[in-house]
Amino acid sequence: HYLLWTVDVHHGDPSVGNMAVRREGDQSYGVLVDWDLATIKALSEHLSDRRTGTIPFMAIDTLCDHFWQGHVPRVYRHEL
Image (cartoon, rainbow, N blue to C red):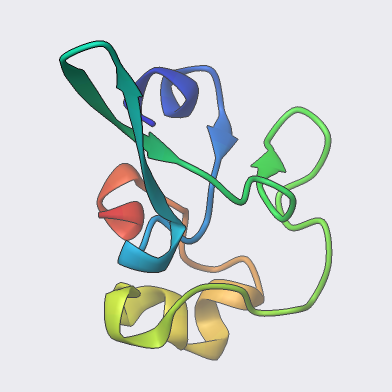
């Protein structure tokens, strides 16, 4: 997740419901799934006006109209 963030690919909803476990032998890895509504900053700040995310896991900044009107920049902590 962090590596993709550093190249301006933002998932938008890294919640428990979007986590999976991948097992290889005796190793287990966490996998973030459901990237279909992710944004790529080079293409668009917001690909649509739909608000995506799981509300209990969303930063308060992203729940305000000011964010969706482009007055609040998206930062990494909004995804945590």
